Length: 133
Image (tube, rainbow, N blue to C red):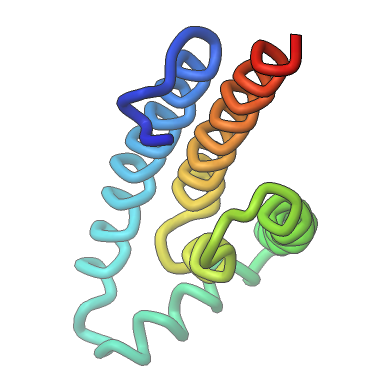
C-alpha cells in the first residue's frame, strides 16, 4: 500500500507525522545552519567539536543532551521491534538519521511508514475476513 492509498484515521496520522517531520526539519535545520555559520571559521571538524563542547558545557545542557541520547536509544529499540514485526525495511536509516537530521524528523518519518504498514495490514485483514465469511 502507498501513502496515497491510505484513508481515514491512518491518513490523518500520516499527515500529523508528516507535519512533525516537516516542522522539525525547518526548525532544526534552521538552528543547524545558524550554528554552522557562526562556527564556520573553525572548519568542519571544529564545528563538530564546538557543537559537542556547547552541548556538554553546563549541567543543564548535559542533562538535555543525555536525555536525548537515552530517548534515541529507546526509540531505536522500539523502531527495530516494530520494523521486524511489520516488515519495515532499512530501519537502520531511521536510527542513524536521528543525529544527522534530527530525532523529530527521523522518528516522525518512521511513524508515518509504520502507519502505512498498519493500514495495509488492516485492509488485508478486512479482505481476508470478507472472503472467509
